[in-house]
Length: 90
Image (cartoon, rainbow, N blue to C red; front, side):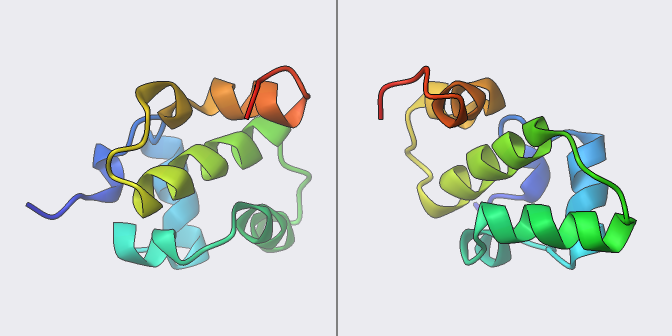
């Protein structure tokens, strides 16, 4: 069974809209992305500064897209927030 973007943990309606805006249509396309580039591209497209939690959600989504067996805690955007802030072990 093919995984869909909406099947990924931490990906809700708002993130699906962001993926659409960024031209991401599938998990396979997402797996080829770099979260930091997606974040900067989103800021350029929206002409707004994005909350850093958006970057964390991109990290969680890309990690899941690349690894369907990713540990469940790493599928959560807040795990990536703690990592970004230096609070999580890698």
